[in-house]
Image 1 (cartoon, rainbow, N blue to C red):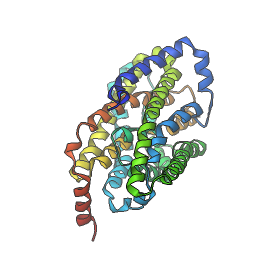
Image 2: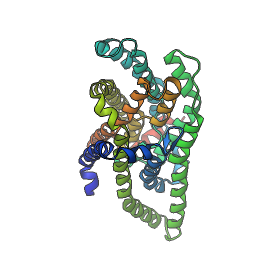
Image 3: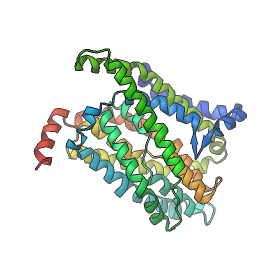
Image 4: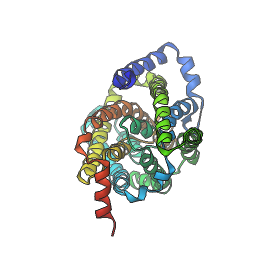
Length: 358
């Protein structure tokens, strides 16, 4: 295993400290970089995420992608967890912690905004970073793309109604510029670049086996850039929010507690369901990670639109971003040590054909 991956948790910890330090040492530079955004999508972070996502997109094979429907179990689990479980458990945890457990420690009358921020996060499944996590657990790139694409399609119709239901309001406006721009930058553009790269590589190989070997070697060489993109993203995210973290450490910890419980709980539900249903590990691990992570740009944009830039709800969505990276790395570590819990791909496909076809 490359040194970057072997000690990734250490590099991320150093990146977090570097980001906090950068915010203190060079606040002007951080403010300039933070201002390069549109619709709550920061273009510097977007470029870095593009570097993270691109190596996996090169591995996407459209011939295999067309057969995803033959293995529907992973899609069923992803959709059930993301849309029937996650938003409601997030809302429940928000109520428990901010209406009761942490009520004595927060400003009276503000619990509703804490809960709202959690709901906005819980109803927005991940679009971009999940490709990074899937790569780190050696997930099936075709299946991961199918899962993310289906979630994005459903989000267009389901996000606003679910948020409106849980918040008890009716004037939820989906920030289309954030949604469309994010999907375009994080999925469409790197996918198009990956397809183009794959075609160029295919012309250099005479056989299918040689082509796949060439693509695999290219992806392996590009992978360090993906990890560097991840580390640079962590530096920027913590640099952007360093002042808030250092100024309100107790508030940050209180917000992080239910978010941590939600993340590990949702991962456990999806991972266990995949194991019980005989889903192969390279589908099960990304499936569980998609449900755990969040589409933070959308959540932040809606929070700002509903409650204001300096609102507690917006702060909660930002803390969700900061908590996510260390949590996801710990889950990647766990997933990479438990593939033996799952059936081999070949046996899973044969079992699926026996049980899923009429």
